[in-house]
Image 1 (cartoon, helix red, strand yellow):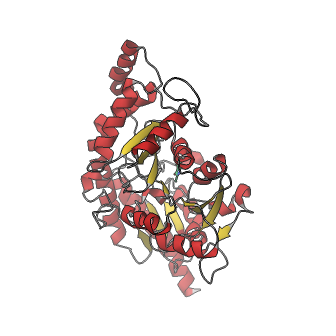
Image 2 (tube, rainbow, N blue to C red):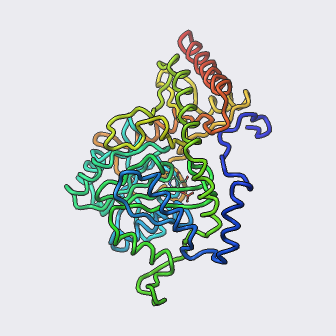
Image 3 (tube, helix red, strand yellow):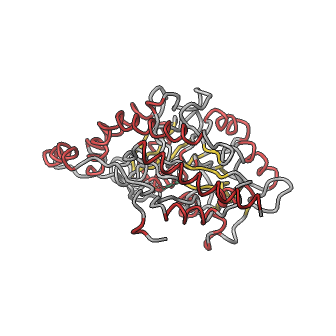
Length: 398
Ligand SMILES: Cc1ncc(COP(=O)(O)O)c(C=O)c1O
């Protein structure tokens, strides 16, 4: 695929301008405080709690990346070296990297056909087959997971659950027993360049994670546990504070773009399926019930099984029309060379991670960012329709 031919990129990060960040940089100059849980990091932490976790009783820690948030969360679960962590193969490599970086073993499982995520039901099924010490469900492509169902899973099994909600800051609830890791990478809806958030209702866990994040040291500089350095700098917090000022307007924009996509997609809904995060019940589990709170960062579309076209061909043909796309999460984790020999748990009666493999052959991510016009969206959907419909027609007469 020729990069030059793409006139409509899949993603254009929407970062604050230099002018918007400047007042916060001036504060850093005045404070002479550049890192180590400085005043801007603490203020951003408070604002994130108020904005992204409104109405929830949570404690949060900001850190350098979403991957670091996953590792801090995993390190605080009380697992033994070599512990087995169940993780869906349908995720970004960071999920399994974090598990291995902490000295644990990723055990790959399938996802649900409808929601594309690991459900408690699939996790219960896996527990019947092998020993599992913790579970890492993933808010794949930003789809929020039902916190109350996972809380119930923790209560019934006694196993710790760490949700990888990297693409779902603002959408994923924390619940009572869960530990949740989010990313603020530039590609995410609330992007600050690089950054992560660890959130949980457990204040002690956040205090432990804060120590690990700062070399494992206590308040007087003694190392009391194994640590690392993954603190967020004041400069990234400056970008975050500037981003927060634009957040309500940007959420509204995202909601409008999502609504426009769904309106166009409705016309050919026998050819594909997508998922709305805007109007999905139940409210108890999902923060996103009003368009104004939309923090979605992707627009994945799953082609119907009767559309006889390879997903790579669809991507190629859209590129010929200047439209950039993504194939997720492709390859899936169990198909990366590093993880090919790893333990997999198949669903009853199956000999592969069948739904993950099928999603990889049917799923395509359409352009989704704040710079799309209604005409762009119409062009993307019409182009997709022309490509898949012509193939469906030729398949049915051959
Ligand atoms: C599902 C998932 N987990 C983890 C990460 C890693 O986050 P970060 O890039 O902030 O380290 C990502 C990043 O895209 C992701 O999509």
